[in-house]
Amino acid sequence: EVQLVESGGGLVKPGGSLRLSCAASGFTFSSYNMYWVRQAPGKGLEWVSSISSSSSYTYYADSVKGRFTISRDNAKNSLYLQMNSLRAEDTAVYYCARDSDYGDYVHDYWGQGTLVTVSS
Amino acid sequence: DIQMTQSPSSLSASVGDRVTITCRASQSISSYLNWYQQKPGKAPNLLIYAASSLQSGVPSRFSGSGSGTDFTLTISSLQPEDFATYYCQQSYSTPPATFGGGTKVEIK
Image 1 (cartoon, rainbow over the protein chains, first blue to last red):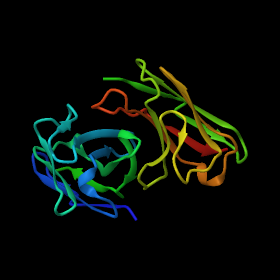
Image 2: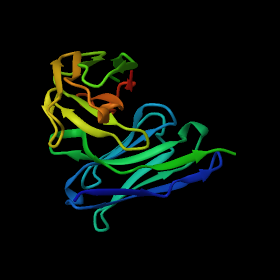
Image 3: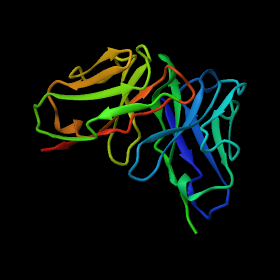
Image 4: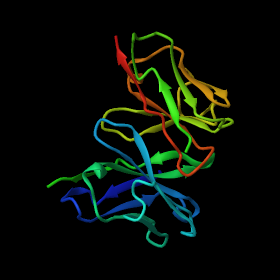
């Protein structure tokens, strides 16, 4: 059974840092591109960042570029999101998701999400 | 970036109703259009990919159509478990893979 389990969310002050993790199981993690997608309270879905299966390529939304860093450890079946210089507008539930076999950015499995709250 | 516009933003319907949700792209995206269902407090769930292909395990009352810039998600007979928010997403020009603003389907 495919599982994605996020952790690392919490309350952080503006300007602070947080590192999110996503533990994957039930599939060959090293074969899939992985993603972070966020959802601000009461709002829609927003793609945040992507990383290719071998970490060769990483991409970021303009809203987080220069502040967030995506990475992965295929030996540990884990995805990460290092978030620095956090702002109030980064407050959201952060989901990790994988590609389906139907194409890039088509997400057939998602984690349960981890809440990041940026507030003083 | 390609903008995705959903309509309506919300709707009220009764069990058994036929429901149609529309998604429009700001430029042609061929058939690179996906639909997700999200229930409160849960992660999104893939319903339809490539505009009209039903994801495994998704009931056949869900269907998708369209190509180019205009797409629809249809629920042929609304069931109690279908009350949720639905999002379209384009995966044609990425990154970013932009989502529509969502359509909340509520009980009438």
